[in-house]
Length: 254
Image (cartoon, rainbow, N blue to C red; front, side, top):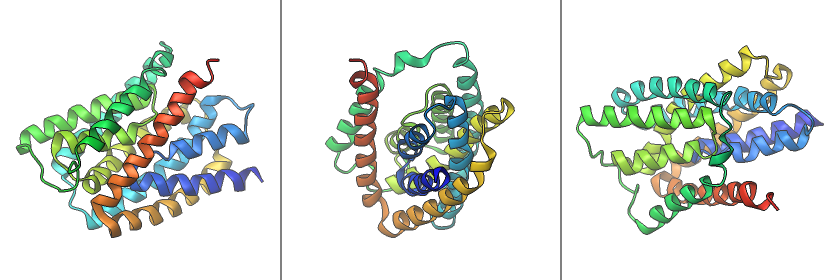
């Protein structure tokens, strides 16, 4: 029964994640609810063992239909991999709890800016010279990769927003680009969790297959309906993140 529950959650997470990110909002709570006495590191590692495959599949699907700017994304992915490792290492030394109360406000600012700028991300018009685009993408990869390794919630949303705001991508191209970066950060975390024995391999395969199936459905939907649809999905997911992280930070404090 537990395998069915987490596989269903993995399918839904893959679907949401393929469109705009935020699948962790679904799968991580499902794992914690299903296995409440299990060490958190094991549940996080098992989550990564599934989500990395769905994200990789989404990247392949997007790359066939959307022109990705590989010259900027390749160094950004490498930087994100290094940053994620650095963040994961730092979290073994410093408690990231101080970010818990800050995160809902940062996400609220992202949401408010997106709602205020009605045309933001509706049209794909890269703003920067190739060299500056590579430098900005590398910086985004390094910073958000580090954040993903250190804390994590909202990583996909931050990547999408920064690609739209800083580089001039539309939401569809930004989401596709974010998937490639997310593969690098997920892989770094997965290697670290695997090295420390924090993955339940007997759940990894069925969850990965379910995540890929969800990813396939989500990617097709995003490609069919375009940037406007992805923008709406982004707003919905960020709103959900604000509610979830706000509850985690303040609702449980009482």
